[in-house]
Amino acid sequence: MLSYKKLMMAAITGMVLATGCTKEDDDDLVVLEPIVLDCNFFQTDQVLEDDPNRPVDFIVPCVASVGGDIVIKAGVVIEFEDDAGLRVNNGSLKVEGTASDKVVFTGVNKVKGSWRGIFYNNDAINNQLDHAVVSYAGGNSFNSNNDRGSVICYTCKVSITNTRIDNGKEHGFNAVYSSTDIRDFSNNVITDNDKYPVYSLFAYAHMFDASNDFTGNGTDYVFLQSKGANFGGNHTWENGSVPYYVNGTLTINDDQSLTIEAGTEVRFDDEGAFWVRSGAYLAINGTEGNLVKLIGLVEQPGSWKGIINYSGDQRNVINYTEIAYAGGGSHNSNGDVGTIIVWSSAYQAVTNSILRDNAANAPCAINAPYNNETLVLTNNTYTNIANEECQ
Image 1 (cartoon, helix red, strand yellow):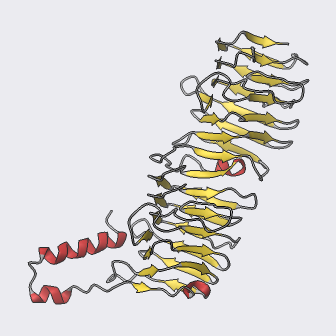
Image 2 (image 1 turned 180 degrees about the vertical axis):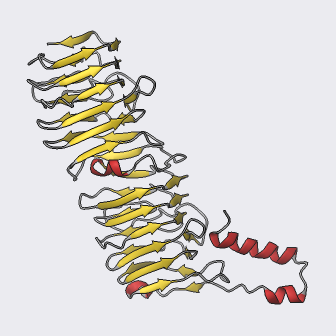
Image 3 (image 1 turned 90 degrees about the vertical axis):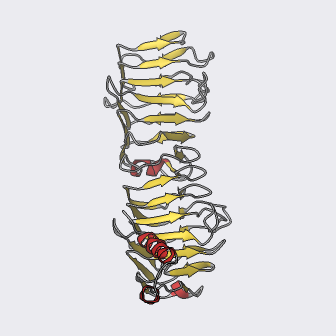
């Protein structure tokens, strides 16, 4: 697997064979210094090519703005001086690495946060990181919103595939704006970053699928927050390498759905909840040997709110699921609390599941005070909850 310029030209050929080389050997070894790019270099269309005689091809000394269409070819190594970075405001940034020759973005100073990272801020269709490495970024922010991360998508369109994001001071990938379009996010490794591997919105959670490896970071969750973006569409959450972390209430609206696959773990903060609106559905599909887990981030009774269902769709099924520590607050002005609240004529099946450890002031696992004719409850286990069902 070599590369990163063939491991810096095999450590400059064994420091020129441990200084035991002949004059002829020394003459054969051509090692060139990197090219320092002017801060306006990226304002026009450019193609950056690998030079095998340069361990580092280019150095960026500043926060450089992209104005042209930039293509970076396989094997190119770019180092950024302290507090430098790349801001894609216009034009595009297309990175075309390969499995054997990745494009490397790293700091001159190999310290977490020594440079800012890559900031995508436009909707160019060519914005792409493929077979890239982004290391030691996540220093200062690019904007007044203080958005930080090694790769930041700020109201942008981007595809990130086969890429490693590591040794960042902040989040690996940051995308918390509703106008973002993540076209592909697959086969990536995000590791050894000080905060979350992914910091994003509910609307994009399905993009962070099981093809990615998000382990080994300071906080190993895919962080999902509710602000800004409509959930949108029919989405599936896969059993990935780390749990999802729901920050706030995830609302699934009419003609939308969320399917959660076997083995998936979802954690919730104290305001965390699933709302299933009329015309929507939440399908949780665990198996006997591979439960879905919906659990409070803090493992104590009442650390999140739970699920409330207003929908008559018969695809509202919770099967082979463990739900723990819910009932931490009411969902509505009626003061309804419980693990699962079933409203009026909503349809809800709960089968083969474990419901446990509710808050003391939420004594009902299934709270259906308005109508229980559309409930299907089979083969469930209730632990540390006063009432299995309330009507």
